[in-house]
Amino acid sequence: GENVEQHPSTLSVQEGDSAVIKCTYSDSASNYFPWYKQELGKGPQLIIDIRSNVGEKKDQRIAVTLNKTAKHFSLHITETQPEDSAVYFCAPGGSGGYNKLIFGAGTRLAVHP
Amino acid sequence: DVKVTQSSRYLVKRTGEKVFLECVQDMDHENMFWYRQDPGLGLRLIYFSYDVKMKEKGDIPEGYSVSREKKERFSLILESASTNQTSMYLCASSSYPGTEAFFGQGTRLTVV
Image 1 (cartoon, rainbow over the protein chains, first blue to last red):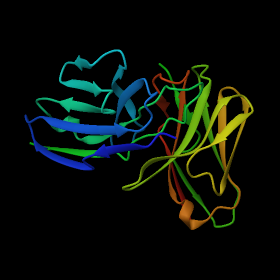
Image 2: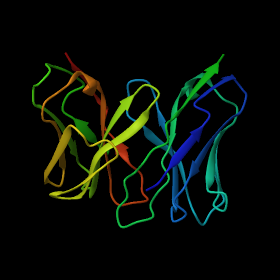
Image 3: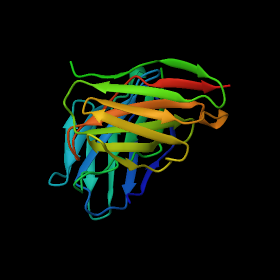
C-alpha cells in the first residue's frame, strides 16, 4: 500500500516569511496530489491539488510543486499570515479502482506576528 | 453547500459500552471513510467503503466495525468501548479516487 511521509512535523515562521512542506510517497501509480488544511476544531479542507500531468500549480499565496520521478510534492506558502497557522496534510493517491485515502502525519505550522 | 455531518461533536461513554458514530453526506458520494486523529499520529484510516454494503479495512480496524446500508450514511461501531479508543473521530467522503475529500466536523469521544 501507499507509504506517505511528510516533513517537517512542525514549522515555525515569522509573519511574511515563506513556508515549505514536503510529502514523499511510495506508489508510483499515484496521480492525484492534494494538500489539506485543518484549523482548530474543524475537519481538514482541501486548499490546493495537482494532477500528475502538471508540474506546478499556484493559487494566490499557495503553490504545489510535483516531482514524479523522485516521488515527492511540496506545498509552498508565501507571505505567511497568522491565519495560515494550522495543521497541513498531504494525501497522494488516485491510482486504483478505489483507494484507501491515506494521509501524511501532518505538519503543524505556526506563524508568529 | 456540500456537507458531511457527524451526529455528535462530543460523546462520553463507559468502558464496555457499544458505541455508534454516525456520518451522513448529501453529495451522493461513492466513497466514505472513518479516521481517528490522535496528537502526533495524524489521520489514521480505520475503515472505508466504496459502495453500499461494501467495506474495506484501513490501517487500524481492530476493535471497530462499520455499516453502510444506504449510500449517504456510514456508521462506525465500537463493539465494546475501551479507554484506548478515546480519540477524535473524523468521517470523510469523496466521489471517486483522485478527487477532493470532504470532512465532517469530528466527534471527540471519551471512554471512561
